[in-house]
Amino acid sequence: STVVCLSYLSFKKSLSKSGPAGRGGSDCGSAPLRDVWTGPRIVGGTEAQAGAWPWIVSLQVEHGRALVHVCGGSLVRDRWVLTAAHCVKNTRDPLKWRAVIGTNNLHRRYSHARKIKITAIIIHPDFIFENYVNDIALFYLKKAVTYNDYIQPICLPFDVFQKLNENTACFISGWGRTKEEGNGTHLLQEAEVHYISRQICNSDQGYAGVIPKTSFCAGDENGDFDTCRGDSGGPLMCYLPEYQRFFVMGITSYGHGCGRRYFPGIYCGPSFYQEWLTDHFSKARAKGIFDTDILLGQILLALGSVILLEAT
Image 1 (cartoon, rainbow, N blue to C red):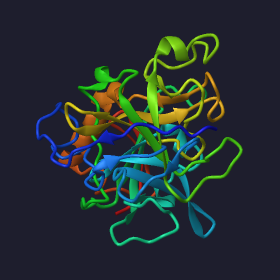
Image 2 (cartoon, rainbow, N blue to C red):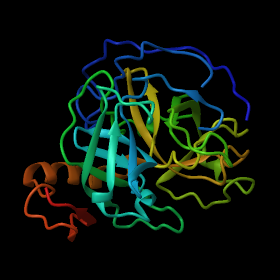
Image 3 (spheres, rainbow, N blue to C red):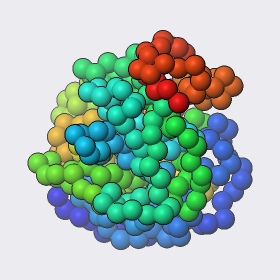
């Protein structure tokens, strides 16, 4: 794949306190260590610098005595990670998972990074694996993270999704394969991509009408930049200059191969699930249902979702 040099984008440290409602707090979507983004920017991408994407999460699962990266995720609250439902298809027991937050190198230890166990995995009740409809899930952390320059939440896009268009500056980042037949990487990769209209992406030459109504495409039509296996669940991060913030416009869901022309990545849109997400945030906070009176391995039907929890 060809690496294309992209234009410089300036991001200011001083962020406006005003912004769209429901985006996750007044200080979301800020990358304190990112003054200026520069350079050629995971297929076709380059390595991300430490702190470049402080909401990126590595979701890791037990494999023998080790824990291995399986999917990406986005920190959207101090105890909530947003990811794709298909990531937990093979391993739904939260005891076998952990979240690694605040790092760009999975082989190094950093004092500012955190490794946190998972208390609950919440899968959208209408998720269909065969066609990736409603490919959205939440991981509930065993303890809240403390924000620092390397750990920050990203804004949810509830009131701003309609602003997404072909000219919006959007980025992908992850530890997945850097080419279709390649291996995953321990160094976080990043690339710039753009929204691709449903008319183009769902055309007969492309996905031929199979993209769910709650999903959309991003990448480039030549396939130079794309997400790949291991990037699933990670964010499509779009910068809106009027708010001076990044928003998680999409969750990496699936694609036909990696970096193929006419087949860009498909992203599940969190904005379509505002009620489902906010219900879980508010009810968990009010009732503490994820923290008390839970038996190890018990499966509960609550809040319209399958919730798998561990004893705390």
